[in-house]
Amino acid sequence: MTAPSRPSALRWGILATGGIAAAFAADLRTAGLDLVAVGSRSQESADAFAARYGIARAHGSYEALAADPEVDIVYVATPHPMHHADARLALEHGKHVLVEKAFTLNRSEAQDLADLGREKGLLVMEAMWTRYLPHMVRLREIIAAGVLGEIRAVSADHTQSLPTDPAHRLNALELGGGALLDLGIYPISFVYDVLGAPLTVQATGRLAETGADAEVATIMTHTGGAVSTTLSSSRAAGPNTAVVLGTRARIEIDRVWYSPTTFRVVATDGTVQEEFDGRTTADGRGGGRGMQYQALAAERYVADGTLDSDLLPVAESVAIMGLLDNIRAQIGVRYPGEAA
Ligand SMILES: NC(=O)C1=CN([C@@H]2O[C@H](COP(=O)(O)OP(=O)(O)OC[C@H]3O[C@@H](n4cnc5c(N)ncnc54)[C@H](OP(=O)(O)O)[C@@H]3O)[C@@H](O)[C@H]2O)C=CC1
Ligand SMILES: O=C1CO[C@H](CO)[C@@H](O)[C@@H]1O
Image (cartoon, rainbow, N blue to C red; front, side):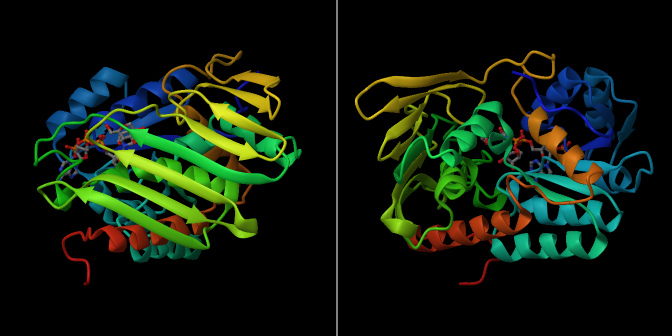
């Protein structure tokens, strides 16, 4: 197995210096991509980050990063409520953007980014890195070939035991906290990928003291009567596995299903038809956390002029944010400044 090839080099700039910015920088380096700049609210953080990852240009503001003529594409790695303004800033300066999940806080912000990208002729892409992983690419091939028969159900969880500190990003409403936007988006995006938009959505959840959701469960129905269930929790670590259930066979994705991992295709009589290992690649671009695949895909969409993801078109990111709005309305989570 080989990782996707790299058709054209883009010069990457990273906006923010937190946890995922560091993981992304490390994966860009592993994959040999051109990481040229970083921007932070503080020059000190930008300098420290640049020194750690061998980045030539360190900016003490997001504005300076966005305006840097040496940067072609900006990876936005701030908390959810800042994605919209930070991605807009980069787009206004003529940069393509790869925006961390959840894409924005809500559907209306997502639509605005999609519209601005189209207007400016720039790539606007959600960094739902799971969609680009080798095991997900193979899974889609198997499903498209009809190996599973008719798909009747999809089920997945994203459950972790994370800090309960009310000020933590996961719990603070002003930082877009909540299990749904942070964790639940993975199984929901996966369901969307396999079964498409739901016809009906039922959600239930438990809110933490801060008003952010700590647990959320969804049951959705889809075209043809297929059903899906998802679970997210920021309080308890579960299996973090996923299953796609068809009339002829099922796919069982091992833990941690949303990162580079293994799966099996199991026929209804229990015979294992295929075992797939998506944890390594032959050409050295694999390994790490697996975030480089989305970056390589972004470079392809710019090189081929499509300026949109074939695996997660921006219109689908907008629709998924609308679905999350619906779920949040059902469980009673509203972010500061959102209309009642
Ligand atoms: N794809 C994945 O696997 C993961 C994705 N994520 C996503 O990445 C994003 C960031 O998460 P994560 O890296 O864990 O968050 P962190 O809190 O570790 O980092 C966020 C960074 O955003 C910047 N920032 C800007 N405004 C604020 C603010 N008001 N408060 C705090 N930080 C601010 C800071 O950078 P600076 O000080 O340099 O300006 C900060 O370091 C989220 O959208 C999250 O969902 C998170 C973890 C894993
Ligand atoms: O994949 C992930 C791992 O967990 C993080 C929370 O700590 C999430 O934000 C992230 O998207």
